[in-house]
Image (cartoon, rainbow, N blue to C red; front, side):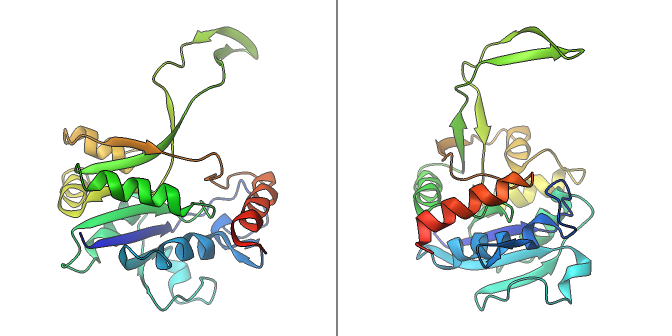
Amino acid sequence: MKIAALIVAAGRGTRAGGGLAKQWRPLAGHSSAYFAMRAFSDHPSIDGLVLVLHPDDLASDIWPKNPHAHAVAGGATRSASVRAGLEALDDTIDHVLIHDAARPCVSRAVIDGVIAALHDGPAAAPAVAVVDALWRGADGHVAGAVSRAGLYRAQTPQGFRLADILAAHRAHPDGADDDVELMRRADVPVAITPGSEDNLKITLPADFARAERILKDQHGH
């Protein structure tokens, strides 16, 4: 298999505070996008790396330059950005791992799990089983319980045969919540692989401190 990693960094997420988009805010001496890119550029099974940027960022110095990465401009939605990255991939690539730049702590083990599953099937994505009790709420009160049986919290990288995910994006230009949902619409089975509680997606200000602690444990700095 020839595998490329596609890092989606075109969002403008502001819930994390700090003025800058969360993937560019300082984190452990670098940025979330830097660590997300490094996890794949350092991986021996990854043959290409594409970074999808907001058009306003493409000509700026805000994004981390990586000799292994090819940068392209994204679109108005996440799906449009992913498609732009897919269309930019070298035609020698046959599989792709799509990862959020806001997940800086992805481990080698999580990546390896997705790659291993792609040897046996067309698509795979990491997830963590829901273990907490789930409630439905109404007007600030508990309105009922929801069964957590069979429920998972989705993570990235999500891996696919390139031909399958590109065909799905072309067939559904309006996109979906994530790339796995596009595969489901195309009746392509998606294997669930082991995620990790450490593979957090930075969303809120407190997530930066947690990510920094995890990165220190992973990288020893």
